[in-house]
Amino acid sequence: MARDCQDARAEAEVQTKTGSGSRPCPCCRCRGDPAGGTGELPSLMGGKCCTDRKPRPQGWREKPLPNKMGASLRQAWAEGVSGQALFVVYLDNEDKSIGIELETDSLEIKAVTPGGLLEKYCEQENEFVCPGDKIYSVNDFTDKTDVIRQLKEESQLEIMFSKLIVDAKIIKKPGKKLGAATDTETFTILKIADESLIADWNKQNPKERICIGDRVIAVNGIVDNEKAKQEIGSKEELLLRVMRGPRRAEQDPMGASGKLPPPKDPDGKGGKPPPPEKPTMKL
Image 1 (tube, rainbow, N blue to C red):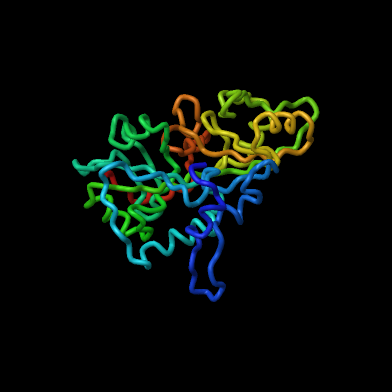
Image 2: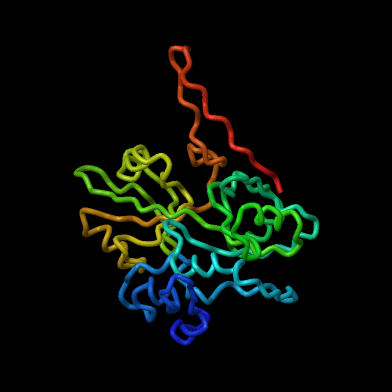
């Protein structure tokens, strides 16, 4: 944590017009114990203090924003974004080519161009953006019309992405293992067994399926890796909080597009026509 959370509390107060007055530093309110040690689940802002947004690159202009533009973002930091984690990337987009395809209505990322500006940034900064992530704001604008205009017209882009977080409730069964091999340090999922508890979860929850590359960030609310491993070994019911990771088409049945393959039609009669594709835009 770049600054002590309590020292930053006054700076992080969020003024609202609902009559409730000011609110304390959001992460102090939603993390439970800012000093740590309780093992409670951290906030959805990447486990960081809400005031510790990644600093802008050196030389970037600091432009004041009207209150109406920043209000929704400040509210998001205060309330959290349910089921999502927020992270920021900074792009110098002089060529007006970011290297993404996004759904214009939902601002969901459909594809990231290999070798494009965004992918190169992510490689340098050890970040990742993948299909299914959504653009939450651009230069502190959250309205989709403003977001698209900023992406098209501005050369300096501060893009806040939201990444899906899944809560998977797993109940152990005799003779079945959890079925996930993970990296010992990061808890990133490296392999999923076909006949396993996680495979069963995936069949029952195809839209929230757990895939190779995803990262387990908590087990029954415990974020410490060693304690989480003990929890997995000792408890019959597990609540796995999993954050979406980079997808690999050859390992994920949904493919790089994040879509399930079309259903088989053994009798050749066909079924209902697939829903029309939602409009997308390449930037």
